[in-house]
Length: 261
Ligand code: B30
Ligand code: ZN
Image 1 (cartoon, rainbow, N blue to C red):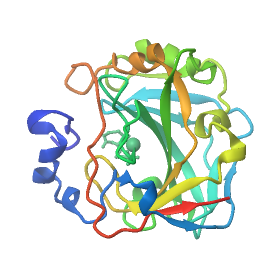
Image 2: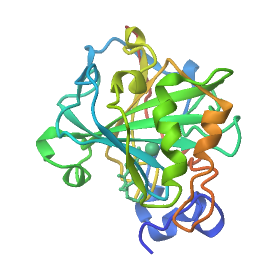
Image 3: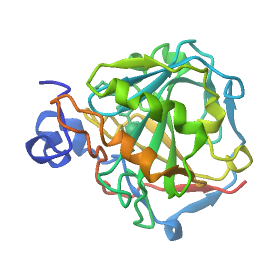
Image 4: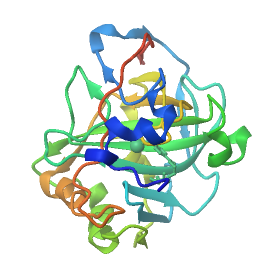
């Protein structure tokens, strides 16, 4: 079985801990971020290197999500803000819901958004993503929330267009044009210092508590049709992956910081 977790019934989030004991830890993700219960701070500037030039990218259906990777190593790096060290870009992927009223993992004031992107980075000192999973400061994950817009977001068209071609698990496709990650990661680079940050876990099994989460306060926009295209890809069982978000987990006394630029 191993990676055969799902989002419904016996395979669903409520049963993950039967096979993955780490999914019942005290620093789990996602969480609800209550804006009235955050600590305002002024952290050093968050730095994203290598996102201002286009990178050849490939998109894969993992059976749990759609993942985007670039083919250069250490071309995109993250440091500063709440991070003590430099982190290397590994992949980004998405979480979505059955309809336009749910789908995000983290909630803001108990409000759901239709989609959430996670850009996953591992600590450079640990040399690989796999190795970094053994350390509590192994990962840094940027999260961005999406709202529904009436117009399609042109930045995402190249990704949305290939989704029908990667309908089945393990299918992958190189994007026709190199992708400018800047426009995927952050809606507006001028607003990128406005974010929430907290310590948490992977939101899928094995739910390892190894991630510093950085959630941009600014949102991006996708049209209903762009969102709906994600719901048509198939999971590891061959069924439509209509939704792939984990419900929020208890905060257990953790502090959520709000960085005010
Ligand atoms: S998340 O950002 O907390 N949602 C992994 C990375 C980030 C998150 C969750 C999981 C991860 O790398 N898991 C192990 C590797 N995966 C690859 C994958 O992305 O799709 C293999 C696997 O099958 O577990 Cu699911
Ligand atoms: Zn994720």
